[in-house]
Amino acid sequence: MGEMAVRVANLQKSYGEIRAVDRISFAVPVARVFTLLGPNGAGKTTTLEILEGIRDADQGEIEVFGKRVRRIDRAAKERMGVLLQEGNFEPYLRVKEVLRLFSAFFRSPRSLSDVLREVSLEEKENAFVKTLSGGQRQRLALGVALINNPDLVFLDEPTTGLDPQARRNIWSLVTGLTESGKTVILTTHYMEEAEALSNVVCIMDHGRIIAEGSPRELAAQLGRETLIEFVAPPGREPSRESLGPTCKAVHRDGDLVVVETEDLVATLARLLAWSGTAESALAGMTVRQPNLEDVFLSMTGRRLRE
Ligand code: ATP
Image (cartoon, rainbow, N blue to C red):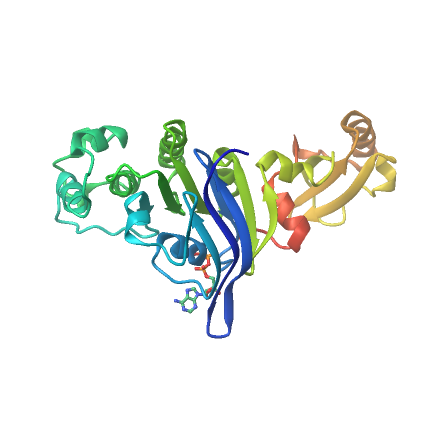
């Protein structure tokens, strides 16, 4: 990998008895999306807040843009942009007033019109915050995070609560950031979001990093299995043996029967034969490759979102 925007080693932070971040180490490559993925309470926000300079770590080493720092100082902050998890803006300010307010915090802010264009809010510049949709509000928050033309952008759960279209708009803005050379550190508990955006994913659980790699590398750790899923009532699933030696497992996930196979064609043939004798319609059958949710499930026995 090339140059690193951030490196941390053995980072640790406790709140009383709770070890929110438990000696984690990682490196964030320049102009890439680096994602911390994990369930609520995994320690993602705490990690971000340390790197943003909002909290101090108890222990650990931090390097930002090649410089070792004890804590994030003013000079490092000038190069950072932060999208806060709940960026609540004053409802009776206009969009351009919010941007102007935040631009006053920086020595050389970008022009408001450039920022408005980047987050597609030109037509809303005079609108009051309270009249914006959830997606528009989040784009305004992103505009605020970009006002100082940062090299490193922190996005803490940027699409929580947004509808699918608004989520995709944010995704394409994030992709545009790395194309223009910016580094993005993202947290999310949406597996699809991590998969769609990330170059590197660290899966966090209970303050620790339990897996790291590109989404494809992580899914490949599960082996070459393909998953066949269909709906069937409890007790009406085929046995693993009945689907032949290339079928690796059959298990249940609620209403779904999940069949793991190394040989899709052979297992499908057996499954079709089984469906005839068992009078199963194989309702809603889908075939897919393992994803990050499957990685998390196999490592922890739990789902990302329970
Ligand atoms: P979420 O997705 O819910 O934001 P997260 O992965 O970002 O979760 P953190 O917010 O970093 O996780 O929390 C990690 C742990 O530390 C949790 O057990 C949380 O309850 C605890 N914690 C976080 N902030 C504080 C605080 N200010 N005081 C005490 N405990 C805290």
